[in-house]
Length: 323
Image (cartoon, rainbow, N blue to C red; front, side):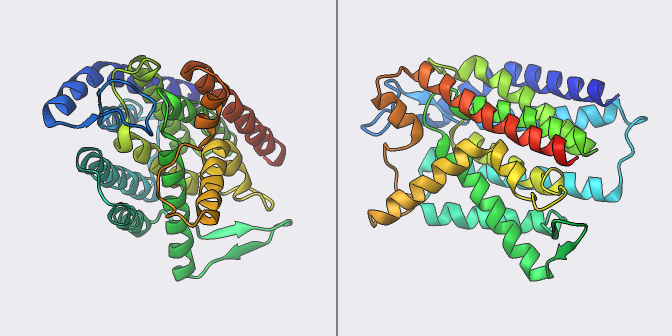
């Protein structure tokens, strides 16, 4: 039954994104949400943004429609509803933040405040890291203020890691597709069916969006999409896959999202050593370096897909071992 639910969520997400993205492209163009080429960017022609809006709408519909279709088979608890409400509300907030940033280039500090505000709302709905597990059966519980601080740090960190990865056609969508598939399998192993359903829907949305976003892209996700995907990986990993046995609480999600996490970590260190602001853009990310080696955009993107999936499969294997 779980496989059927996942397949339906995946299909609805994919078809929804395929159908709505052309409309979003026209809306973005009319609103002036256009990414114009400059010295730092790789693309050569003005390209509409706000692709993440279509992903958000399709994802929301896919999740809610799947729950409706299988309402007789799915027993939604009060906690499930609270988590889902918090995630959908947080997703809406981060999409609005991304849309404004894509159109008007929001200052980094203001964008960070919006992200923290979104994380606070999610915490209010019970999406919090409440404990970690030790080598035995010991549980280490956090105080309430520690829960909030750790959760906000995790959500903001992962959200920005995915956001900073967005630099080539199809890169974020493809990495998110692979990561969501692995997250879905890990969630299935742990009996986290709600997270499994959402990850299947995210995978479908990303696959549908790649139809328009793979090189040469006709529309970009923009911050609207990269922030949305980062927030969902951060939030749903707290709800489900982050709560694993042994001392591996953070290891499996980090492996699944290894490429954006490590790329961001290196960027922070690199900019810190150069005494530049953390959020200052540069052309030294992994994808820039691959292009510098003479790779085409497609070659670089496919290689990063492969690296990401290798780490993801390592995370899946680890989850299976400790299951």
